[in-house]
Length: 117
Image (cartoon, rainbow, N blue to C red):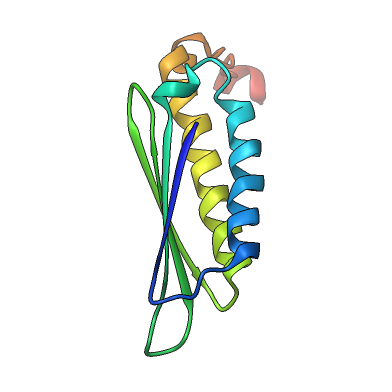
């Protein structure tokens, strides 16, 4: 997976880069079926000048789709964690759609009104 991180109006933070690397390794476990050269993760840290919150926006480019996530928090690591949690849920949902899980879902039998009484 190719990772590119940019910092806008924020000093370079080594802990932020470590957090991104850690969450990217967790995310790569879900993306084992894809060729690593085709995956791109772009992230951008910025700081809201009005309230001082850190904003992290992440774009994950897959061969079949592009996923976006944004989170803001007062701590850099918290915003990173929230954005990657959102990306993980999007990846799981996308993979389920590709596998066509909706076609394989079992339907529950309905109880008739006469038998329920």
